[in-house]
Length: 300
Length: 300
Image 1: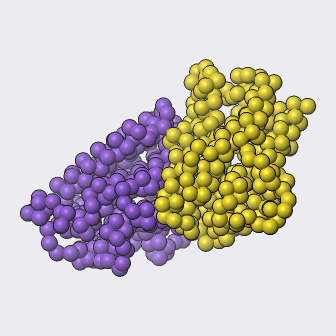
Image 2: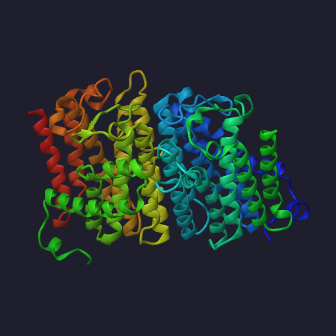
Image 3: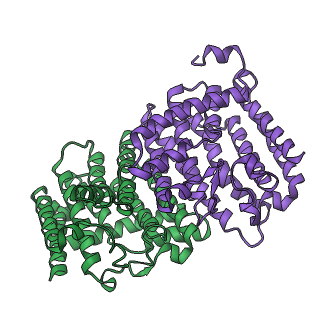
């Protein structure tokens, strides 16, 4: 068993495990960027984007799946960091004037506001490229590295995250629930699912594992919750511009907040049921509870 | 020997070999995009960017190096296509309003003019991602695929093409020849060198091969020649906006056209000397002659 004594002895709470992931992944990213950032403001923009906070939820999902699957820690931290690089790249580009035109992210000016638009564009590109380089340099077998690159490229490419972002910006005139579901799954869900799939690749094979259901349902819950926050939340509380997406058709605008909330509940229940028993899955059970509580808070 | 009878019998001219590469790579890209483009205008923007012409010089360099090295044809065409995807992505992003703000490319409206700025941004991202997916799916050994991804990520990332594009847009107040050389090498040279390096990876190992010198020198000659064309050429002749780069410091603006032309000559001579004798290298000798002739034409 590669699990640590600590994990064998007691179940970590969601917050403890999230904090642990944050520490280990941020430390990996810090070391990585010391050696791999570009010149001048390009490098500073990359660093600001990656080191500028964030809950590191995607790394958390990946690391927790790896713990449940008993996967070697070193490679898993690097994969978590690569996924976070892809997430950061998507945020930098998503905030650009031609996309969501956001001036705030996590309570701070966005990358293009601080470093200029073309530097932000190039920094995003460089972060995506670096993610693939990190995977190519992993200390796991070459076939596993190839599978991980296939997995992340599918999740973030023209039939994954890019398709989702495109559909979000250019919806059909009157999108229905199916179209919105598909858009949401591609825009946010695909990368969250890849957090789980990549853990299974590190374990040695992607079979029809129940954790994939967890990833799928949590990814969907996550996005609907984000839309609910955009509708009901406040900039001061969530640290980014809200209301930017006000004109967009979302689950929330189609179903109304109450029914959207029920959908989140239902996703979270299925996600919960897909988790194994025992202390190793406690942090993932914890994240489901935390998302449920966040939902209650929004509706209160 | 895997060389074809045709190649053993007579030396192809540069134009014949360029035409052959174009046919095989465009056909590969066409099939690839049928299965891998995104939805709606995102997909059309990807197709327009990739199928919109171009000399396919980078695929040509890769394919010719593979022929000299006697590398299996199928994998080599796919690698050539992946490199072209990266080149196309860089052009789509380079033309964006926040970058060079170009309205014409190869005599046609640029991708953001045709499809809108955010679709162009996403299409570029999707092409880069697809390039890595193509390499990950290659029918060569997994360690070779990993090496190819390392090679292309280095060439196009924060310490390769992205650094070059950044330095080009944000030069120091009075850049010297060293800085310009470095910028040029990163912006254009790195990917051209990767065309040769990737051929050596397919062959089974990147040693200090003379073809790498060819790639390095031709890459540099190529970029200086491009700047000379921007200064001396006309939109009608080269099919893209000229003079956009007029305010930028280049080899040409630092040295003047005459000395810049001598630098091109010197690069091309070293490149020529790095090539092997015999019919297989005839197309690469031909490209050097063609670039020399293009230079003469510009100065005439």
